[in-house]
Image (cartoon, rainbow, N blue to C red; front, top):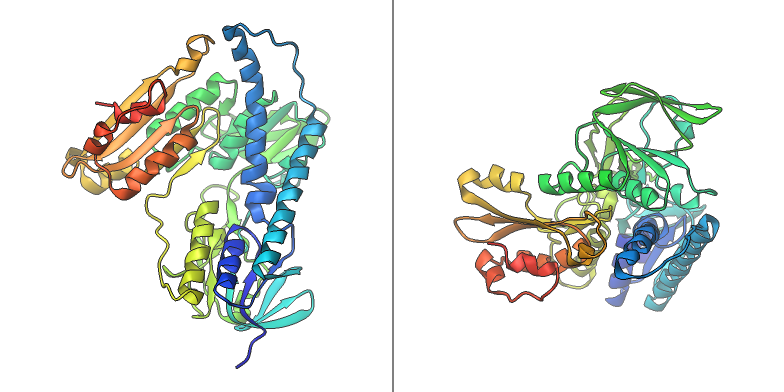
Length: 459
C-alpha cells in the first residue's frame, strides 16, 4: 500500500522534533503536526522560560552579596511587565528557530490538532493523510485536583503570563515544579507559601537533597505548611482564600494560587481507540486526585500497534526533555536508520533549579541500601560554605554525596546541593554512566579552588 508519508509525527515538542529531523535525515518522507507554538512544553512553558526566571530571581541576592566585596549597589526594582515580555519574545524566537530547523531538514509542518482516524490515517483540521508509521509525541499537561474553586487557580502554563507580580503566592505541590517556582517567586520578591501533603518536598530524591533544599528555601524566606492539603478555594475581597485540612487548619489568603500537583499525559481527544492503541493506568495520591493514563510502550517505544510509536511525557517514563529527545532519536535510528537500538533510562542525571540548586545522577542512598543491603553500601558526604560566601556573610551551604558499592567500589550515585550543581553533576554523570569506581574519583586531580573538587577529595 502507498502512503502519503513514511512517518507522521503528532506533536512538535522535544521528542517529536528530534525524531522527525533524524528520520528525515535518513531519507524518510516526514510530516509533523502541532496545534500550538512549535517547541513543546520545554521551549514554550517549561525549561527555557523557567530557567530565564531562575536567572532573574538570583539578582537580588547578588546585589546584596556585592556589598561584601566592596561594591555599592543602589536601589533595585523589578519591572515585571518588561521581564515577562522579554521572556515571551525569546520563547517565540526559539519557536521560529525550530520551525526553520524543520524546514531545513525537509520535514513538512502541519498546523492544527491531529487525531487518529484509524491505524494508518491522521486527520489535521479536516485534512486526512496516511502514513506507514506514526509517532505520538504530544507530551503532558498540568492537572488540577477536583476540588471546589480550582477555577481560581493557575498552573505552570499561566504563570509565565501574569500581568502583575504577585505580592503573595500560595503553591501546592512538592515536586520539581512547585519547588522551583516557590524559589523563583521568593527570589523575585514575592511572599511565598508552599503547602505540601507530607513532611518533605521532592519525594524520590535522596534524603540529603530533600533536607538541604527545604532548609535552604526556608532560610531564603519560603514558608512551608507541611502535612496539609487544600480542601477548597474561594474568591474574597482580600484575594483568594484557601481552606486547609491536616496539620494546619487556619485559612490562607493569597493573591495568586499556583497548582503544581503533577502532570498528565496529553492523550485526550487523540483518537487512540480508533487505532487500537493501548493505554496504561497510573494513580495519583490524595483527595481530589484522579487516575491518569499514559500510552503503553515497550523498550523500543512501540505501542500495541507495531507501526505506531510514542515517546516523551505521553508515555510517563522519565519525564525530562533530554530523555524525550533520546527516545525520539533512538526510534528514528531503529525504524529508519538501520540501527536498531534501545534508549537507556538508567543513570539519567537531573537537576532541580530551586534556590539552593540541586542535581543528581544514579541511585539514592535509600535505593542502594534497598537493592544491595546496608552492609554493601558506603556513603561519602561533605557539607561546607562555598568560598564565594567567605566575604558575603551569607549562611549558604553546599552538600555533596557519593553512594558507593562496597563490594565493587563502583559509584552508584552522586548528589549535590549548591551553586552550579547542575553544571557539575553533568560532568560527574559521565563517570557514573561509565561505571567509575571511588578509586577512580580519588585518582582524579581536583581543580582548586572550586566546589567541584570536593567530589574527588572526599574520604
